[in-house]
Image (cartoon, rainbow, N blue to C red; front, side):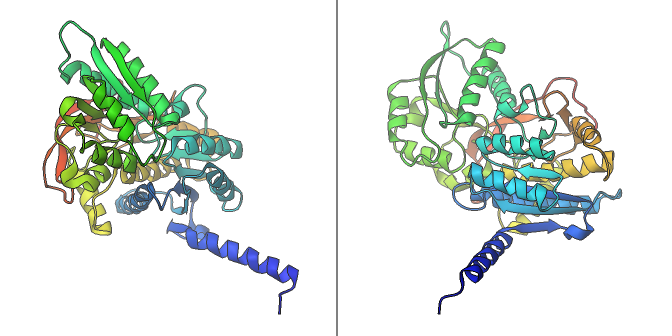
Amino acid sequence: MALPRFLSAVLLSLLLVCARVEARVTLGVPAAQADVQVGCLFPLDGRGGLYGKDSLVGIRLALEWLEQQETPYPSLHIMVEDSRSRVSRAVRLVRGFVREDNARFLCGVVNSAIAWAVSQVAESERAFFIGTDHASTRLTEAPVSPYYFRVNNNIHQSMTAAAAYIRDRFPLPDNRPLRLSYLGPDYDYGYRMWRDFRDALTDQGVDFEIVTVLWPRLYEPNYAPYIHALTEQPADLVVNALWGGDLVAFVQQANQTPLFQRTRVANFDTGGNYEVLAALGENMPSGLILSARHHNNWPQTAYNRWFVQRFHELSGRYPSYAAEGAYAGILAIAEAIQTAGTDASDADVQRALEHLQLKLPEDPPGFTSFMDPDTHQLQQVISIGTSTADDGLPPASKLLNDWYIHYPPSNSPTSD
């Protein structure tokens, strides 16, 4: 017998609520015991799913680190939802975090386009959004939101380091400009990187000319036409701005062509991510110029070794850079609330975040990451290396070595 219409509606509502609860991951103390509620958004499935899964472990490590400190930190209740890499879903989840769960802080987001949308909603809802894993410079350009702060390096920082590397390390041709090609994803992240890279080369005094610029769509399955174009139009350097599974697919397909024999290839923002190195294994070419937002084999400090090995103990794998981004985000929230107080005004929390100093696993000895109060962008050391045979962190068979280290402006704090 058919259920009455109102009972059907009630059951449907209950099913939707249960589905939402099952999809949510909670970490930290129970909500009723927490000083602060935090809502985080990461992709937990599909091509970007590893970033979300690694971020969950990174959050657990941050909570573990906070528990180990002699000075007690505010207690956190952290709710993590799957963004599914969709803007509309992310916006809806953010409003739920703030209005239903009383979240004062938001964190995460991998895709820069989604991050921009979330930042707009966060500001309208008066919730602080701590960006942990997206890089578009758009979010840290004037006028910067008083509620947005980013703890992973952005495109501008990566491209400034890239231009310095080319100036200092790349063998420029005699008596002619550097012949340069660029391949980037067809959305804001790729566009901003191309703009920032050209600006940085000009600022560093590197003379260059553009051979070709290509824009494959995000999650493109077939890079053959793009690889053919890069091979047929020789350049001194190809800068590849793909990330994650897209970069892995590109390298696998390019390995079947002469591209890597005919030109040097670099990826200055995400190419050295351990996820990429592990996924490619023996198929990772030697001699690629790569960087990432965190490296498992640099710096060789006790802090970074603890982070990498403890991550491996908890998960059975080595971390992608997303893990340290989420780790930094939770530490930033805890530090800000400890400084400002659990009942602090928004202005006091903003002030605490603007003057944040955060010692992270990626920081080399003598350096502490610090927030730029004008851009709300954490200032960090960026390291660029070359892929070489190294089986120290399996299943990767190539790791980065021959490091080039680029520091932020000299007004950085240097205390450990």
